[in-house]
Image (cartoon, rainbow, N blue to C red; front, side, top):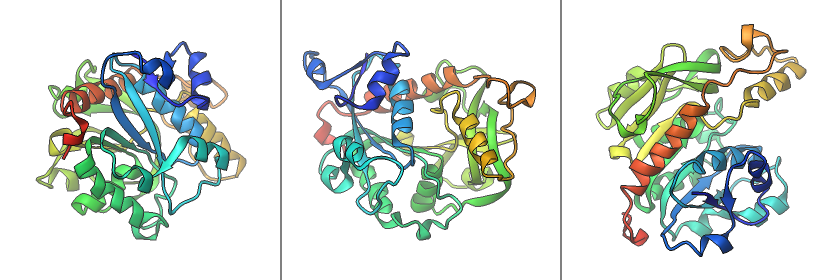
Length: 305
């Protein structure tokens, strides 16, 4: 089933070239089902890239998804046009009275700042608290996962001695968890971050379940409240060339950025990256939508609490 997204969103044309089926609201209304209402708080600077990455993965499911994009009132994007933000995004204040089957909160390039020093920290904390009563399941990605673990459970992040940058192998702690349905014994995920939340701190917290970690990259997936909260430290949604673009950008700035691990064949940046995480990414988002959103959310969305 396609994702129902606003007309003229740039992701539509990009994804149609990949033979991914998306629909506009006029066609969606002819289907006699209740779509899942998913909100996306997009904190990444390149909004259109992140929109496309997320829509690509949410489309790989038989469920109809109605997508809404959220922005912060306390922060103005400088890398995306005002016209785009006004056309496709609503503020949290405009969306706060609605309820959603799912919420995705992306990462943000502010990880080296203390949480309290982030300009929009107060508003983000309000959204974290709001999600507990207005959303069936919330998926926090990368920096948002660290921020939410700090806000909800008091777990501090730690700065890594070197950037965690590359594609890493991960294991499943509970192979029978529905989020892993269809996964191989080992799966791969891109990471790009300077900080982490230690696995030892996660497993010691009684409210948290460490579902997956990597021998090289550390904690990857954490769950709380029987799936109402997921905290994911990597970027399963990344397109094949995203890490390459980050690496080439840093090289052009003369930054001491290492070559992404397990990404280029023979660690040669002149070769096209080897994509090893695509299947996991589609399964992860499909399983989240099916088992933790669709099968958990009430038919009357206003009954979410």
